[in-house]
Image 1 (cartoon, rainbow, N blue to C red):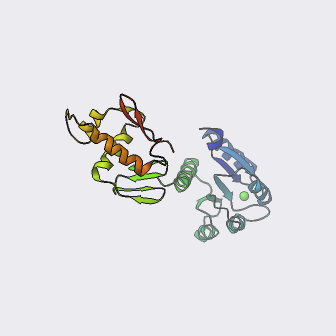
Image 2: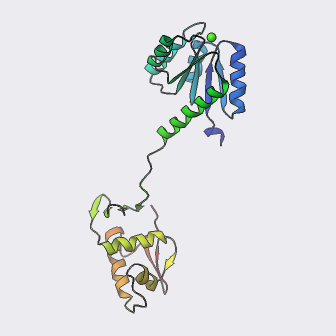
Image 3: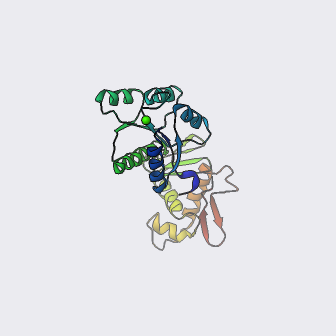
Length: 238
Ligand code: CA
């Protein structure tokens, strides 16, 4: 894990003993940890450019209670996960904490293993939310071309391109063998399912059509490249 990926936690806790213990334990887990003793210090920490991945927030602070600090944080648009820590075990406090915008709540004395597990779980969920939704693996992009092998649809610079099933299969074979020279005979055998077929012109005609569809300049192809005396090479450059 690089420095930048290491989650940074902010522990807001006025009891020096407990704060030091939490810091040490989270650092042992590989996190980077800052401690704020008061809501004021926490507010200062939160305007620093380095973003926190999670905040552990004690409810009983000398200057402002944790509920109010959490509420202000949310009002300011900060959506960092917050786990509230408190000595109070009143269920009303739990509700108050959640209504103030906290994500979780742990009563003191808490079990350190449980706290670590909850922190991990919140960080994991946060990563899922941040991860860009995965592009379907059956979509091929190169140049302005977009080819979806699930729906058998294709477009070039946003304009729909109608391909035959055989043309899709040919593009697919090229894509699966991108960067490698494929011979005409190999294409006839694998795409057309023709063994020892003498008429390699078929391949040339199809490649010419793909170039017309997907090359900016079909006369000077960048993607469906001829390799003299050998065959074709598909180059999926952006
Ligand atoms: Ca306290």
